[in-house]
Image 1: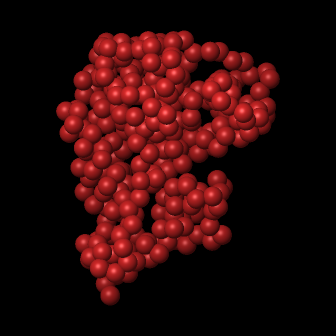
Image 2: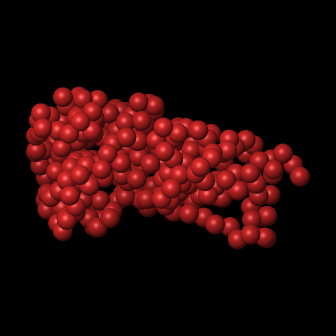
Image 3: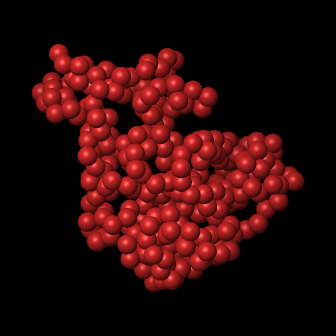
Length: 294
């Protein structure tokens, strides 16, 4: 059996482990980036020998927003989607879109082509991004799924030329927004834990990857300045029509695919609420300081 095929088989065998959420301190133990979907991390992580090159991508440089839930990413995507060259659809949730070749003929056939389960998924994700660009007639695509914080390593591996936007919001703003959600019955402690689940990998990504850091509060207070910075980073000219996002078609605002509040549906940029840091718990204060809110 060839070295390439042997390498692929090892990757297929380890895929189940690669998709479990790592403990934060051990997030980089394996060479293969891991997604965070299963409830428990592996007890032991094997190092995989990558013998198979990444397949050519139809979308060479997609843009991924790395942000917590309730951080204003739907506003950001609506502003960007109002640009004549930028397609920013609803949340795509690529990390939970799976491919499972049937054991036997299908698996053998794909392995002979140099396609294991991991790379098959990347090919599918890439094709979806490409389809969105084709449908829209645009040439830059942005995915703002909050779950990107859990799989940024894999996104970087799949698209070495990907661009990243890190969207921050005051930690109390995130928790307060979670608290104000319709039907919320969670305790304050549970809401903080939910926010922190995003904060930790977000900060890891922000301090590891090259990209552009934005703050929700600045986006709402100075939308022209911030969107100009984003356009410069994406390599497209700024367009004043971006700020009037209500005049553009962004599709339906649906549950689990982004914010669908009256504020976002108004089509107007609403001012962000402001918060201090004196009453923050130590866990939240840590990120308030790291993100320049202290």
